[in-house]
Image (cartoon, rainbow, N blue to C red; front, side):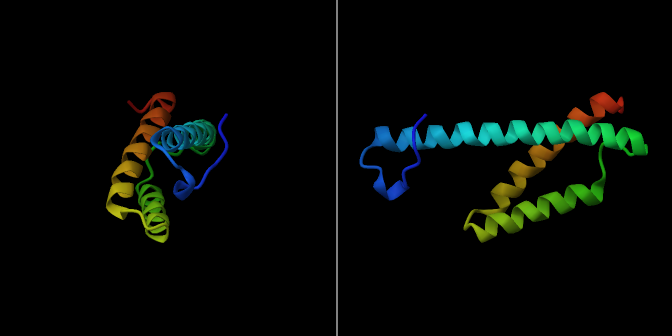
Length: 101
């Protein structure tokens, strides 16, 4: 596993690409952890008789992501698009188990 190097300290494309690949692996690990929470949400929603999609919560999650993106200097529109896709995937995952599809 490579160690974290700030972008300005990458002296060539090989080291820069290694850092991008390291971050990609970290992102995948975080998404896998998030999926575990989605699976637990299914159990809790079933116990409460809740649907997979709760529109108010969807908008809250997306707006939180937009705000976080703005705080990090990222394009909030891009992050909103990515998060809507992530949330839609999560809801579809929940709906399959809750048997809404």
